[in-house]
Image 1 (cartoon, one colour):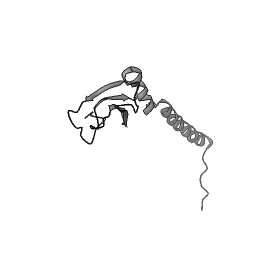
Image 2: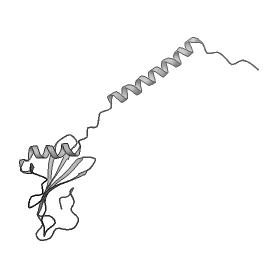
Image 3: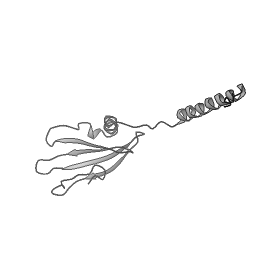
Image 4: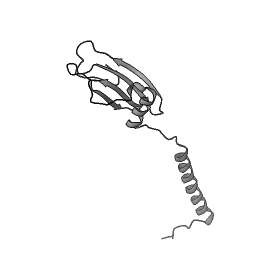
Length: 126
């Protein structure tokens, strides 16, 4: 049985250089990968309160009670400022989307005529 062939020093150097090159490419790709910024629930509510002073006293238990409802999505946070009633589950609501980059948009207002439906959607404000 023949002994296995030994690699020449230049072949070993080539293999080592190839491994270092591949590792460098992987590290560079990871470093250049854009960071996906996300916003948390409290930040999104605070951004809205800073831009809409009429919502600074939300939530509270005064009459009528005022609540904040939130729902997370890939885009950011849907936020609803809701006035609740005793005979009507919802008196009115104003809804927003606060995107992960901190920008915001009003998604709607909800003012039910008599009795609000049992399920209220923060995303559609209905």
